[in-house]
Amino acid sequence: MSAMKWTKLGKIFDPTQYSLPNECVQFAQSPQALVFDDFVRIYFSTRAVDKSNGKYLSHIAFVDMCKNLRDVIRVSDKTVIPLGGLGCFDEHGIFPMSVMRHGDAVYGYTCGWNRRVSVSVDTAIGLAISHDDGLTFQRIGDGPVLAASLHEPCLVGDGFVKIVDGVFHMWYIFGAGWRKFTPDSAPDRTYKIGHATSSDGINWVKEEARQIIADRLGADESQALPTVIEIDGRHHMFFCYRQSSDFRRNKGRGYRIGHAWSDDLANWTRDDMNPLLDVTPGDWDSDMLCYPHVFECDGQVYLLYNGNEFGRFGFGLAVLER
View 1 (cartoon, rainbow, N blue to C red):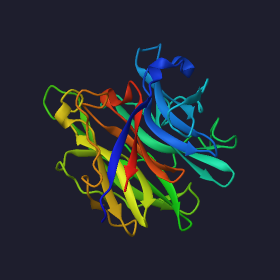
View 2: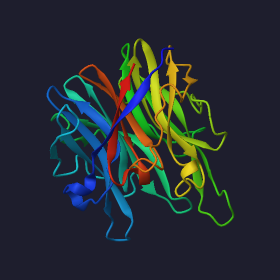
View 3: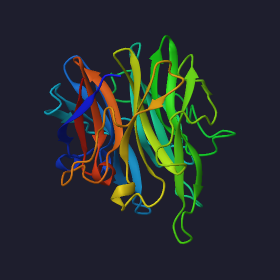
């Protein structure tokens, strides 16, 4: 396989420099691009504080940027979809939301989350559809389209959907379980990347509990946020991965960007080194790289990603050199 290289273009959006909707503060996590003729809309997950308990709620907003991916045209003045109803899977937040065009509509696959008691959170994947070019999205129902099941008991989320030869393909994550890594620590989760298919984008068939990307760090590696693109006739997946415990403060155990390739969408070969995107000491992404999204714009392949503190201070951009 020919060598590929990411060239970093720096941080392109800092949410602390703008007025965010819904009293959201900081955080522009999991940037996801929707390319228009003359601009690029980048959705992200931002956070408000739940006044009832002081905990975070995650909302989806967007920034429209010129195609130079430098100049900001506008930031949305309201969130694009309300949070779910009482007791629903997306009651406390949506993070991330992956968007794709389908006919005249824009499909938004949401990762909804809700707080739990014995563990911190559970997640599932919903579908909301936009008929106004992605300004607002309406759920197709209050429940998810992909959720926990017999052999995937928790934490189904991070759905990325692409239509290939008339078939909807979804790459997503599923929880391998929760556990306490030390007696006095809160439970931490481990999740892996899985695959499902659909004829309509609504009714999905999972390859139940089949981990499609090999571990690099061992069984306790967590893999998140897959994104898939075709480059020179081959499918490439980018994702982030980390150790399942002690990753928040220990830089060496935090998120990095992984890569795998496939010729048949069934079997994936992991190759994080080609192309490699690594931390830059002393910069905004010196401690971690997470939540990648790869897309094509005017013949170039770009990667959006978050850096330190899980995207508290925004997202950056890299371009692929081949």
